Image (cartoon, rainbow, N blue to C red):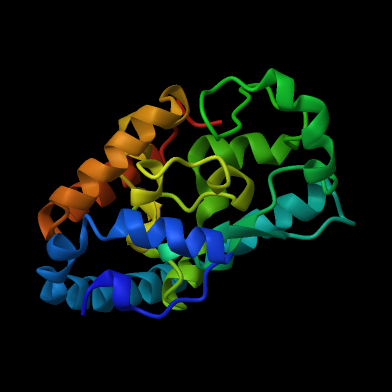
Length: 234
């Protein structure tokens, strides 16, 4: 079945039409990956469940540190993201910013340090004390293992963008929405915050066209090394 024939629940009908046009270019490539996708999904579930069990003590420690930093704030941060073919879902993270972070964004938008539709700021004043550590090590991303188990994300794939970012996408940019988004990907292990938007899209499309078990494993292994502390994460 071609991608353009699959029924989806898009963020908007506009997204659906634009994603359909863009995705049709990748249909033949993705149709040839049915076995890979089935095994990838099985691996995602197994690895995510095992990781949640092994990392449970770390989860408790992070929760305790977040509560120590701000006893009144929530531990988890939930944010709407755009996934495969424009379908939205809520991504989960350990909270690394002050509770009113979204409201403060408008005051900081002119200090954006990256290009395109993304917002990146190295010394973002919204980040908490423990948040700096979590973001530096990418430990704030660990709750996304829940998103993987639910099928909203994969372990490896393009990062899911915000709706306001997708509104600025060109048809070329929308190609990155043709597959299930991931917790980590080629962009993250290639420089992350030091890479501009156009370069990120290029890396995501490179991954989509070349994805296989070997490349997924290499990205996961490189991600584990980055968890020790990446100077490019902020």
